[in-house]
Amino acid sequence: MKHTLSVMVENKPGVLARIAGLFSRRGFNIDSLAVGVTENPDVSRMTITVNAAEHPIEQVTKQLHKLINVIKITDLDPDNTVARELALIKVKSDARSRGEVMQIAEIFRAKILDVSRKTMTIEITGTAEKIEALELLLKPNVAEIVRTGRIAIERGEK
Image 1 (cartoon, one colour):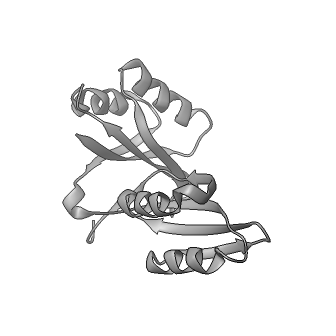
Image 2 (cartoon, helix red, strand yellow):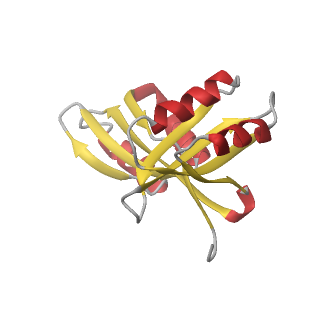
Image 3 (tube, rainbow, N blue to C red):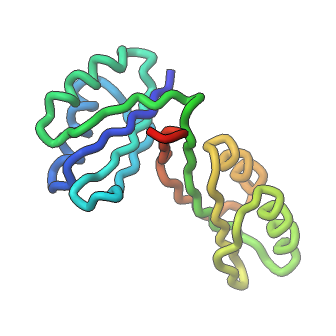
């Protein structure tokens, strides 16, 4: 089962390494990790996606709470969370195929960021499934892909 953890931490050097090391020592593989400063410049939010099929997630959250720089941990409920990823996809396209690539991008509400004689760069934001569906359609012509990890926030007034 996949879990998305929102971990509020002090914005200090070494915190990311200590948290990643804790997951590693406990036998967890991090599927995605995104870190950014919050509305408070002294606090960063780490959004960590892990597959907790082999180990209970409580094991690692208890260990996280013991780390000095960790402020708060939330195991986000998928039904009460807004989550997105970002991907940049460079596609091989000449003048003949450019129109087709642009139509596919439009269907997925993706943006064309750059066009050259031989390539186009597309930006897409959405769920992992949406990004994977676009990648699948473009696959024969994909030159390069860069993806972020999942970022997520709880719905409502919390």
